[in-house]
Image (cartoon, rainbow, N blue to C red; front, side, top):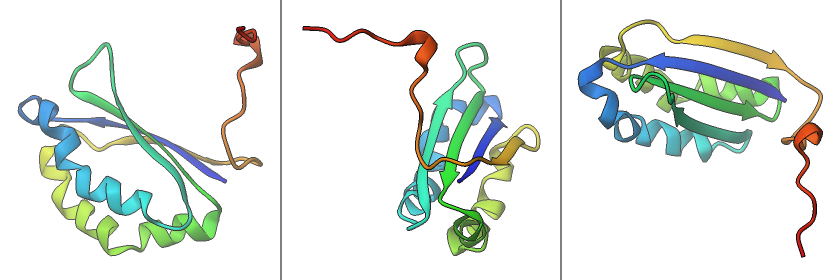
Length: 110
């Protein structure tokens, strides 16, 4: 899968509205057949920073995402709300879902 993490530094006046600003883009991306997940989180240390964790089935699915109409629209509508260009980590890994974090295994309860 293609695994991507991106940090978005949002202008302070838009920070609380960011989930709504990206809602249409998020919903359209999640509906793509090759999207495994597309999840936003807000930083605990910086309320103007959002982290996007996303994954796509393969390179073809990633290319379809970048070539989509909703991606092109986001390229136009999101930057005016940002304080800087988002930073990204993008890699291909040989799995198709989350793995368990064995070092913090939770024992069965019962």
